Length: 343
Image (cartoon, rainbow, N blue to C red; front, side, top):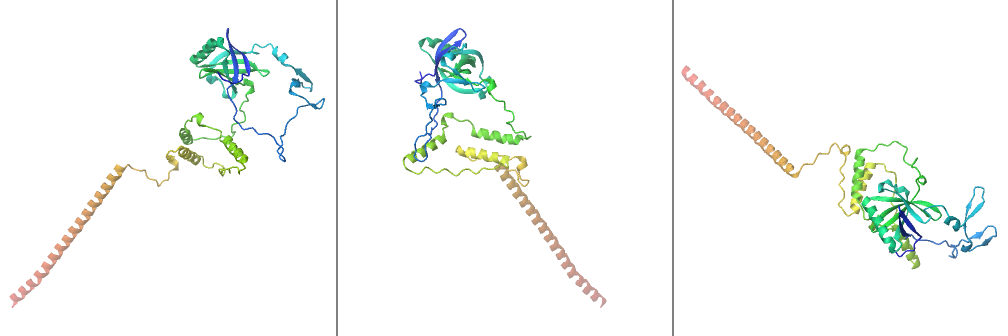
């Protein structure tokens, strides 16, 4: 049982089943509140509630509520007037339907409450409703009255409790007309691929790990001022500007996201049209070694062939020279023989 003051007591109407409950806030604010002060002397600035007719300050006990008509006439409305409203939801959370949770537009979500069982008699019907919601995988749509108006709510199971989210009425949610860009833009598949890569890199997060860094920074400033010290200096703001290259921005975002998570720097695969025409595809190490060996073998073979050709040419030249020399030696011998015969 939550040790929180209930803000509304009533019952859940589930067909003919009535479940006494207490409504308690499911959320709390941790934001830092500031007081208005007189900057010259630090004095508190307070608001005084003054009656315009009597021009005097009035106490809280003298203050009621009234409705201002179109002509400016004030019509007093008392709590008793509102207590006798002909509404079945005045003290009852009346369940009107059960629907799949995805039927509820998150834009309609308002304040959140826990519904605490109102005593031992409420234990059995409370548990029955909770288990029925669990098994059906649905949420209950209900109507209830709170703070002078009828409201719409959604009941769902949170742990072992039933929670209720206040919902805005459908006509209270504005249509998103005129919000989206009216300029025609073409998004390429490759840009979507990089956006998907960034989403995968950021991945999921445990919401319990998230905290209000702004509030912590304000607390540090307050602590420093209270101690008579200089407040911490703010880090240099990141330089912003127009995103001229969407692809580069996405690639850098993927890389930065991985580095922030302590992962290795992201190797973003560049798109085909962004590659340089001089870039050559890398080959596996095994293929490189084979290629080198093949090239070396080819060079060796070519060198051997060249040497063989040179050797053959040299031999041919030597043979020619030998023949020429032999021929030259034989010719004078013939001439000498001829001369002897003439004599």
